[in-house]
Image (cartoon, rainbow, N blue to C red; front, top):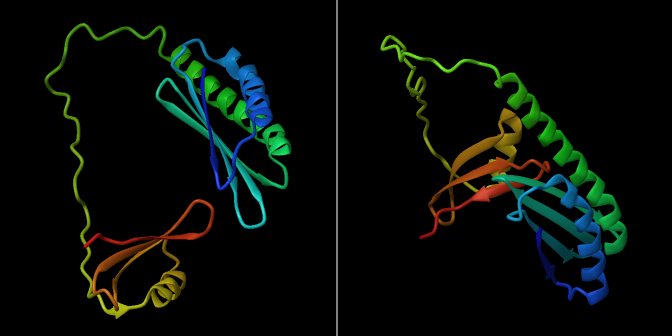
Length: 176
């Protein structure tokens, strides 16, 4: 496994690098190919330390993040999370392999198989009223939507406000 260790707002000590590599080496038992990559980020934020580990194996990404007061303790918490995710994906993959193992391959291709193409089934038009980001946040909350398209009043550009997986909001702005 190739391991990349990155520090953001923090200089990673050699001891922390060595312990990280030692602990990640225990995950090698799950991977057969040498193309597996691990990226470990140690971020120092305002009042907390964030450890994020992202594994890239066989085209699949597994990611776990832990916030705490100590990077060493964070490693002890994040690695079991990763191991659980790896086991979950491997079991899912193995079940798929077992379920499709004894199916016969079609000898003749039939012409009457019509695969339904993806179609646009609904369109919606609405007027964009100029508003601030705060007004758009309130409007999105009132509607109960996971995203909201609006015309930003100051820059007069179309922007998208969306709800992130962590519950916070994100904003997509076009570059001018």
